[in-house]
View 1 (cartoon, one colour):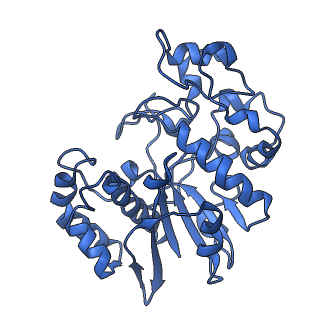
View 2 (cartoon, rainbow, N blue to C red):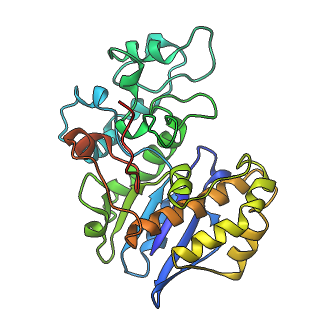
View 3 (cartoon, helix red, strand yellow):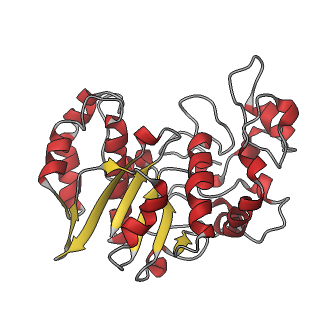
Length: 306
């Protein structure tokens, strides 16, 4: 099974798309709400087969932060957060930012900058807040740093919601979960009854599929206009749509605020399937910081500029 979850702090904007391999093709269903996060992995693992789960959220830490940690790698650090609930508290001001409490800012304040945030964490400059995979490449602009929690271009809130409320309880309960790329290649992690989790960004997957929206993904019109090209990309990935998914694609995934999230969950699924089927390489830079601490975006082959 392949699945991709578009995650958010707001449970109403968490949607998941699922596809099952059958007869040489992936049979995909329409996106559905993630729902109860505690039930997500048991539900996906119910059939006993291997599960590849893409997540639209950071899995990893910037090396400038990780270099001060005693743990050997990110999975060990993540498991240890169960004993450090203060880690997830978002600071309102720089006076409470520390390595034990790195997320900032809780709200907009005058004079806040990423440079000041980095300095409060003991980093030399704002670039230290970013992982290698967050930095701009020749193909796309930079992504938001993990610990930044303000504005539309941020991923910190989704990371907090997923790590604290879902991943930590799942790991604590002993659910069979592996984290790509820290614990191995994606296909090597796919074992019966186990879920391999990988960071998949819909914006990156969109480029990997050769797709380009004719406008904002937040509007139904551009998503609807992309429908023919999206169907062609699905055909190229051997993804067969259920009637409900075909209708959603044709309609641009609806006019409500969650339309962009349903769209992202399907695009992310296509990116994941592309790597599973070999259309895209399971590439990870040969960098020990990336492989042990920072992680990588599945299917991304472009390295940062410079």
